[in-house]
Amino acid sequence: MEFLEFGNIRNPKIMLIHGMATTWETCYKATINELKEDFYIIVPVLDGHNPNEQSEFCSIHEVAKKIEQYVVERHGGKLHAASGFSMGGTILIQILANQIVQINRVVLDAAYCAPLGIFSKLCTKFLSTQISKVKENKPFHILLRKVMEYGRFDEDAFRRAFYSSISYNTMLNCFSQLFEYRLPKNLCSIKADVTYWYGSNESYAAKSARNLKKVLPNLRIRSFDRYGHGELITKYPKHCVAELKRIIL
Image (cartoon, rainbow, N blue to C red; front, side, top):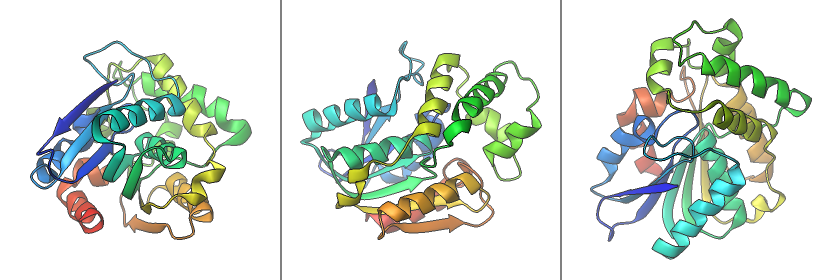
């Protein structure tokens, strides 16, 4: 796994973890440009999502361990803050639960933590097959439009954000991990200040927020009116940075 770093290392350190089937640049380039004068930014380029190396995403736990090892070895195991979008947020939840890296403030943007039970395998297969058609520029299935919950489904924006070199196996592994992910029991003992963001058009993220609130009673939940999945960071980065600064400063 590759790690990128931006800014002055003397500044407070924050980590940004991008989501599935997209890139760190799509998710966070604008955010990094806004924050790098005041913070030292660490960005993991997730396995299976890096055009500069051949790799496959295997599991949330494996990626969490790689990130933990890097932060411990290079940064003493401490971060001022961290944020993760979608699957990146789920990875961040696992890092919090492992309690190897000390993080003071956390923002989870539509992190997945609502397992689908007996429907997980079916949804994994269906979504992996449908999203793979994005590479071929084929029309979206009507159910995919519903599941993605991207506002009123801005298809052009979705295609621009999509990492076209992602493999089918990586998509399978990502969806399987997300749809079967259960919140670790020891998550309740973390000391980080955690905030959960989601768009009001995201029913799955809203359910994830409710699940997380049961484990973390002090969780702050913020819903952004009329936003869909990923719209805050990709379409309105200045708004995103302003909200993020309110939490991490």
